[in-house]
Image (tube, rainbow, N blue to C red; front, side, top):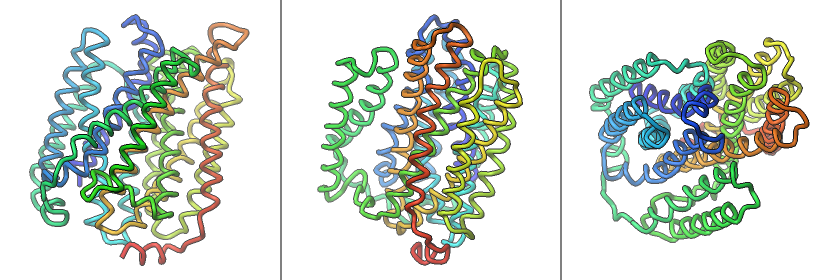
Length: 455
């Protein structure tokens, strides 16, 4: 799985690595906050469109073919982005990269559920969780000079070599899912793209037009109608693109919701925090990467540990502890001011980076562990699809609330931005509290019981 894991890491790294550079890019490209946000949400928009089709594509092409295509696609998008002379071309390059990430993410989960025995699935999910959680945390620490781009391209080349060499020995579609090349429901694909894409677009437009705008309301209403139509079509189809019947499994539904909310917390906080360092505390861009690094390192350690413990400890304990700690970290940042010492903001970041990954891996294991091998691919695709959609929406909402808070502030400059930062974090806090309350509803299922269910 090494090729997929590194490729997934680079993809998720790209999802949030621009956060630290957004203030500088706004000035250099002469665009507004709502416009520059599309470099983040546009990337996730494409991921959200491609992800629902990954299950269908895995029945037409082998895992090896899909991963090699995704890595090649990512390299092309990275080169376009690196050489982009203006915002439009930079956005195109980012969206091309999103295609690759949308293909790699669900395949990581699918392969893991098929090749690891049930009693080791928690550790496997911890390994994948390390990729998904560490990348957004470490992304803002990257300095935006040419060297990180060169390193990313080198990593992608290594991924291609590993994939070409080692995925030969295990073909998920060929051995376990069969490349059956089923009928392609073109109309469902169109509904999926318009529905998921419209949802992200509507929320993103609210950053500039406002939530009361007819443009925003119309887009969101149309997106919801199209999504409802798409889901109904999948439920009644004999060969659905996505098997939404997995939501009849309550354990999978609860686990999926917790994963989505966790991702919303990570992306919204990691979008707001780098800008607060620069615009609220007046920290230089280069130093911002350094002060974000401790939280990223802690995130990596906790992600790995949480996955292994989820095979030995009740999921409810880890998940509730994780969200409880996350709430404490967000509250710490809510009390941060433009005059706060650096160590205090770093502490708040670290606490969040302990809590969020502590809840992520057990939530994934809890949800996917309820499915059998026949439905695990659909389950992982659905979980990843809605995770990216919720993440894009969370980023867009945080952007809107940031601008709203600045507008409400009586001050200006750093003081006004700090107020906007606090208003944006209130959304993150509400999401964390909702996730904590949902986690409390989980029954104290033993790890042994979960393993029996997987078998």
